[in-house]
Image 1 (tube, rainbow over the protein chains, first blue to last red):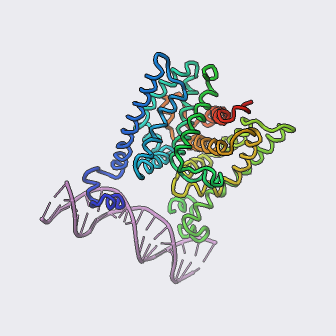
Image 2 (cartoon, rainbow over the protein chains, first blue to last red; image 1 turned 45 degrees about the vertical axis):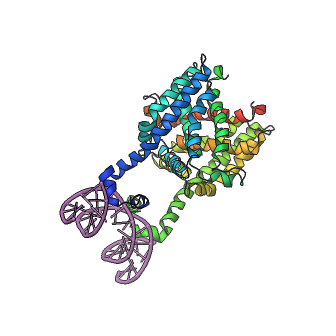
Image 3 (cartoon, each protein chain N blue to C red; image 1 turned 90 degrees about the vertical axis):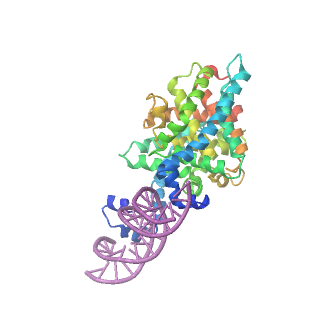
Length: 187
Length: 187
DNA sequence: GTCTATAGCTTGATAGAC
DNA sequence: GTCTATCAAGCTATAGAC
């Protein structure tokens, strides 16, 4: 709280005045950018639906619409979106209250994408679709956490900060995962 | 520190005496089970190599050898392994020191699996292999974080605590991701 | 709205008796 | 090796002056 107040060049007490308790400030922080990101994604999904019309978008196109906005925002300003996405990774993996926060701020949007995936993979079992999204979520959030683990593991060949490359590899990986489950529609 | 000491029914001061500073205790906690898990995995990899001899194990078999020990340990005692794997998920996604900890305690083992995957997918580019492992890592650790997010997202159809089912879905998802990259060897 | 001041607690670590 | 006692520092939250 003190760090935040001092960075904002205001007094600590003002946080409580304007935002209430610590956790309410936390929610406000998550919400502000979640709304922006979710709008980006809705727009990307609509665009890829229009491109595919009168057909339906492919799995690859849907995954792309879901993930590209994160790449795009992460390169837009200096540190802010970068830090935000790293925070989301930690929340997504927090067993205590992480699930609830993700449910609250992201699931309404995720349902729109699940609808699109259901259309793209009509023979896919509902349960399989949910688990596939879950795996997607883990791969995606870790990617934008930028933990530097891959830097050392790959002996410098790959860099976790290279979101552009990570994104390019991630889309086919995830699509490949989905298609493994729904072979009838792996087109 | 006080919670840990009281759970162990010893005095707080003893933690410092036996383990040193807080972060040294933390490392000791990570190490103890990491060693056990890594040994399980080495054994599983050796077994699947023997089964496949004189050939080499498939991607699915290798992914299975990497992930099954986590499922197996997580069901063995009441809460301990469960909590440990949830902790690992948070460490894996921590951008500050998470990467280093994962490098230190798990990468020596991971290199053994990367060697096996290289054999199974001889035409796979080194860079692609590394990124695929990275995505695997995100999906895997989130799965054992048990955040309950999928419970609500799926309207109760799936449960994050159902590791058995998660594991059964995870192996083909991840293998599908690898194979998307290395189509020449998707057998 | 913004500040000062402070209450009330919790934290990690250690000194020193036994 | 184990305990008691305590330190110095940190935290969130709020009351009350302006």
